[in-house]
Length: 235
Image (tube, rainbow, N blue to C red; front, side, top):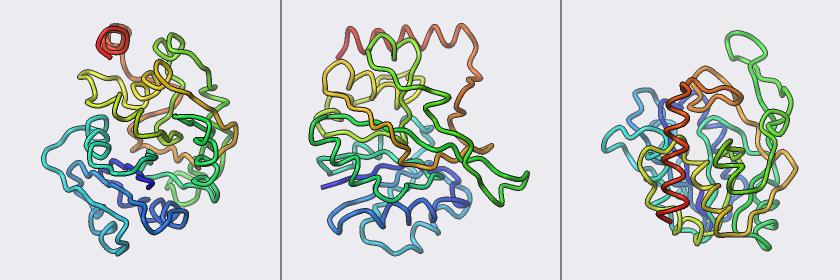
């Protein structure tokens, strides 16, 4: 069984297109677990209007932020294979089958993505502007990814044994995808698919902005120390 885990927050503008791109690739016994973090727009209404039994919506209990809202979706998932999905991307045709094939010889798979940027100031039309690998090249290794993360959550899938090792998330993570990638690097077989399988939409509402971080130097050092304690000592 496949579970797709998504964390939503005011994603009504793009979520229908994303969910349709995912549902078209899933079997009838798959699920999309959507953990909402208190959306004030029409996100919940859009999800409910799709009317697909494979959608499992978890309404907000309290505002958790993107990292621990993703954790909530992962904790609720039932599948042996888990994909992560952002609320505003587009899955390209063949993504699920390509990743499942790669997981036959791995526990954790990540892949490339096309960067999708607005072609005008109103975000009414979108164009591809290169690949994620050109901005954040894939690299193997625990130390390398502890120091500078190459993993992007919307480009990863993994077996349940990886999830069981990664949960519960430690406190004070810089981002959930880095933690999952580090757990996979330390304990499991990791595979990279050098093929864009997602259109990764970049806009002002992104939780993560590729290529730059608003965090200061001291915050970055603290994150690395917290990660070091979690991955090298606690797991």
